[in-house]
Amino acid sequence: MDAAVGLPDAWSQVRAPVIVPLLKLAVAVCLLMSVLLFLERLYMAVVIVGVKLLGRRPERRYKCDPICEDDDPELGSAAFPIVLVQIPMFNEREVYQLSIGAVCGLSWPSDRLVVQVLDDSTDPLIKEMVRMECERWAHKGINITYQIREDRKGYKAGALKAGMKHGYVRECEYMVIFDADFQPDPDFLHRTIPYLHHNPEIALVQARWRFVNADECLMTRMQEMSLDYHFKVEQEVSSSVCAFFGFNGTAGVWRIAAVNEAGGWKDRTTVEDMDLAIRASLKGWKFVYLGDVQVKSELPSTFKAFRFQQHRWSCGPANLFRKMLLEIVTNKKVTIWKKFHVIYNFFLVRKIVAHIVTFTFYCIIIPTTIFVPEVHIPKWGCVYIPTIITLLNSVGTPRSFHLLFFWILFENVMSLHRTKATLIGLLEAGRANEWVVTEKLGSAMKMKSANKASARKSFMRMWERLNVPELGVGAFLFSCGWYDVAFGKDNFFIYLFFQSMAFFVVGVGYVGTIVPPS
Image (cartoon, rainbow, N blue to C red):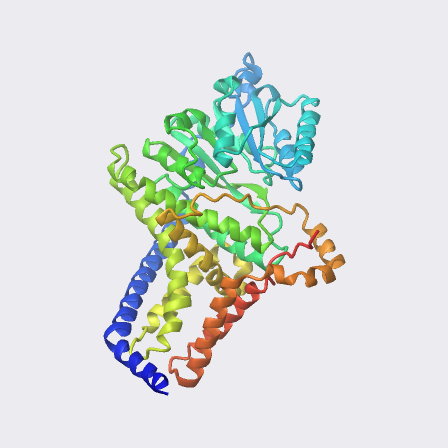
């Protein structure tokens, strides 16, 4: 009985001097981060409008005349530079034929094109299938080589680095990278190489991704909304304002001389593409983003694959920021503006603040304030700013505007994993260098048919799809919602109930394409 009475007394004694000040400080920090994120989104909105109005298209800023044999008939195909195309793979059973076939179909003189299939597969059957596919194209006259390594040291970066060590690469002027699910159009090289060929200061030409399975399920639609904003706004703005943006790891063309000058591929983080881009930028090289050149690719359609991908994409940049901050600050070859852009806009706001504030503010701080009425959150911080940020994000995918509500809930759920991964990267904890290849399913229609045929079997193993962290956060938010109904005054329970349902849905694995157990 005394213990039961003593617990409320202890809470009341700790609440005023400890809990309330700490919670007020947390609210202030989160509001500050929200303002930083809002200003960054507003800045990009203003710049992208200016870019469109002023017509600052890449073809107006750089020379990009087509390369053709007619310019010098005596040279013939020698008028075209030799291009190296690398296709890194790892157990890509479903999609290896798509990427190899698309690359071998590029309309570029066959004697000026070198294709490397860098296969790190561990499945002997898949390795044999990929090797036979390479031989099939080699018999058609394509200069294609199949390369394997004894181990996966360095993962993708290690494979790309190994591919660059061959003697014939010294004859290549440019290199292109396509992940195993990417399918470039035949004219891809004709539309990208001229920018590098005519402008010696350019190191990278990045194309936009186009998603062939965006309509497969609600989760892929949510991903499309986020990535379209990245490509249509973030990449466009960065390219137009300071000629720097992060290489996306695929569907990009590099000047090999720039890669070598920057130090080549490094495997110190899981974002070797971003690492190389920053080092090349610090050497003074320029980048060009071509939003009109689109390459077909596949979005991860299972929640497990998407979660692993987001861990890598969130942990890697945070870890790279930790390792390169001093190098960026002390660099003497680039302007202070470019340094500021890389450190503040590119890293701090987009890669760190955006993840942390989403989870801590909307899934922890706001629900917690319900139990401490002395702490008040201004309406501009919890309603107006988030609404404006959401509307600005929606410009990337107008066709999905009606899905904004679901997008907000899903992004908040994923912020749990992104925040965790960001902190792991900043602290360089145990999973900082974890690399799990994103699973591709190849044919969405085939998977849907398989799901229907195996619905009963899949249901029986549903427990294997449970996600305990999401269930835990969902229970916390649901409890906060009921407490707000009983004692609150700000009507946060409306948001809390919807957000808790989103966590519960993900927690029971009812999101994305459900792959039947084998």
